[in-house]
Length: 246
Picture 1 (tube, rainbow, N blue to C red):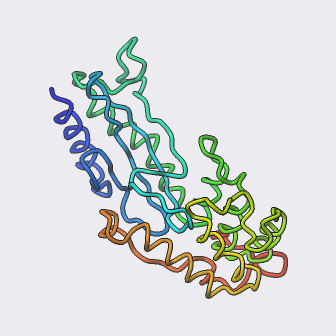
Picture 2: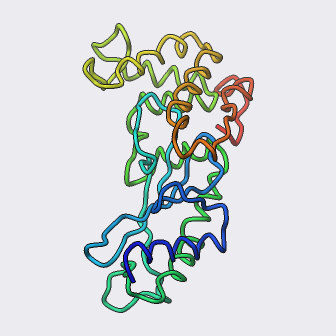
């Protein structure tokens, strides 16, 4: 079996069971629909070696950093062969010539990926997961964490975080981002509305960045523009209620 035929076979098998997986490219599946985040299954091409690898990826689409390519993600993980199907000595790879591969692929996505995707059913839960995930602990970068807390509606905590990482770049308050960074100007736009507590202006920025990531891409037809927790809850933080979205 050719590499292309093997990929088509495994994708077809999965989609027979779970039509929510829709192909964005011949090797990228979206767990539809997409709102503020995209949840993807990506088959990495190793055709010259006779196998492919499988990854899940989660992408948050409302950030100042422009990321081209729908397969990029903030968090990711590998999906291997199951103990039921894994050929002895092959290290869990999805071998093109293995007749059990398509069933194994569908089984593994059901067992390992779908429960994760389904559990991240709010923006707040997704941010929390991505923030701490081992492969790319973006939560250690304080400006990103501040922006996500703002998006979740916790303006006091977002302001505290933003102040805590101030550096010599006081004018625009974009710590750990340098003036020649490609997205410096975009990060600079966060400071004024955040420090003023201007929820409407922050929400406008978040929607603008999200639309930039989606409009004109293959994601667009499966994407629904939704309000952020920032827009739907009156206040959270020390003086306001906590919700599951935060």
